[in-house]
Length: 250
Image 1 (cartoon, rainbow, N blue to C red):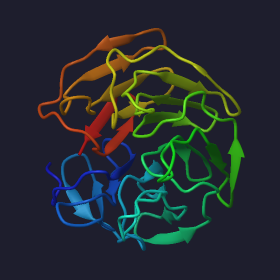
Image 2 (spheres, helix red, strand yellow):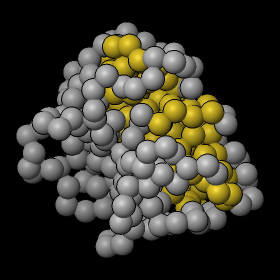
Image 3 (tube, rainbow, N blue to C red):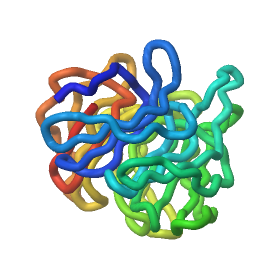
Image 4 (spheres, rainbow, N blue to C red):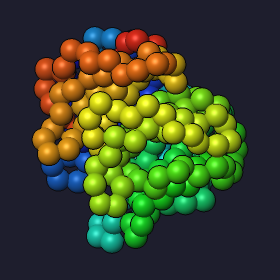
């Protein structure tokens, strides 16, 4: 089912039959809206306290985290440290992160999450932070600072792929083990603002942008990337609600 309002830069969380998309930017302004997916249609959820786009998201439909992003007024286009938690009906202020950023990646669950990459407003960042449900703690940095990345996985087995580093779009993939990042198998195409589903051993990466809005889709089988059927509509900065081998792009 189509989402009720055209928007980009929103976060996604949850699964194909219990998904969540929130925040983002419409044609006129940053949004604080939340919509929930049941596998066929979208319904409104509780509004976030802070409207913003290009935030990081992780968790499930009933236990999600939104953090960072760009909040009005813009300019100056500085990433925020604001975090909020969602319980399936309402958003509550959560502890702030150590590094304000937008275009970041997120993985894990509400009590064991991790965020990484992004842009502060003045510089690309490689900073990684872990969340235990009560506070954010810095962990091992990415090898390559970048933003507009794709992300999947858990706090102890995450992947960061693609994005923009100064200055080009990249196909770089890095894997996280809970403390350090190591190089992974590069994407089949240089892509930023890509979305993904799955985990570090079985993942689907789709959509994005390089010189055009991409409809591409690639499967990671823990050994190599394999071309999959393309999306019907090329796009970037979409929300992904995903679990295992099933995914929604909104």
